Amino acid sequence: MKNKLFTSFFTKFFGATLVATAVGVASTGTAMAQTQAEAQWPNKELKLIVPFGAGSTPDQIARVVANEASKSLNQPIIIENRPGAGGNIGTAAIAKAKPDGYTFGISINGPLVYNQFLYKNLSFDPNKDLYPLTLAVTQPNVIAVTAESGIETLAQLVEELKQKPDSMNFAIPGTGSGSHLSQELLLQTVGAKAQAIPYNSSPQALNSLVAGDTQFTALAPIALVPLAKDGRLTLLAQTGAERIEALADVPTIKESGVADIVGAAWSGFVISNKVPQAIKQKLQQALVDALNQEEVVKTLRAQYMEPTPSTPEEFKAYMEEEKNRWEPLIKSLNLSL
Image 1 (cartoon, helix red, strand yellow):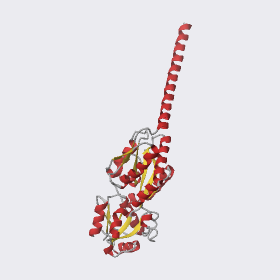
Image 2 (image 1 turned 135 degrees about the vertical axis):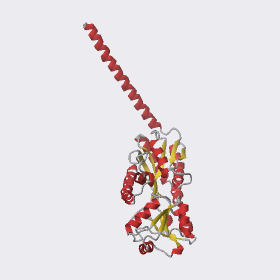
Image 3 (image 1 turned 120 degrees about the horizontal axis):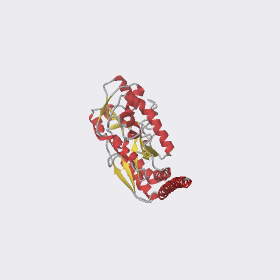
Image 4 (image 1 turned 90 degrees about the vertical axis):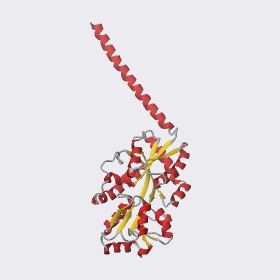
């Protein structure tokens, strides 16, 4: 009887020990494989998701930076355009990608900040599902009127808005866009009113201004500068915190003396938050190095963009500032998409 009990105990004890050992060995093997994969990363091509169409501003930035970053990573970076739903579809794809570091992306104000307050059901949480690698560029919108209006300063525009409440319209390339929100913030700050008229694109919004259907707008410089040089538009102010080099003669809103507000557009590189930290760091460094390259800086500035490479911590803090700036405005306007 004692022998049977001893044999039973022996079998159970050493059986459990063997199982535990096997589990431990398997766990160790998995950890070693993961460490090896991280050490060898990248050993194949990477995919960079752009949540907007080919030729869009984020697409242009992605291609310029990817071309340079691929050199230091010694692997090609393939651009994949995934447009739709204000950038939400592509940004969700970045967040939900396999977390092996081979898929990352670029996104903008909307999907990373505005849309969590505009859309009732986002399929991703930009604050939890995405890791901020680095800011890419900042780009101001420029507030413009037609030369025929006779308005030459932002202060004059604001005065006319106050004299003609509810009788002036402004063009926006989509409800909830950066253009829309920056103009609403200005109106709210100075205590003026005007009606937002949404269009499907920046060219359509610009055409409405030129045709006289709207009285002012705020759009990317690349859309406005050619008409300003032709004498058809007057550029009143840029919405960034500082003047960009290519628009040195156009004051910021703060410099105009009208209001101390900022409403710049920006883009940044992000990746799934589940990607191992070592890989995040390698990719972040490659992107920052690319953004600091002289030719990359020159190319982006020629498109009225200011390269703004950053640490992940700086990018995260910047997005928090943006959330604090825009959440109250979006809620006060009862905007919902």
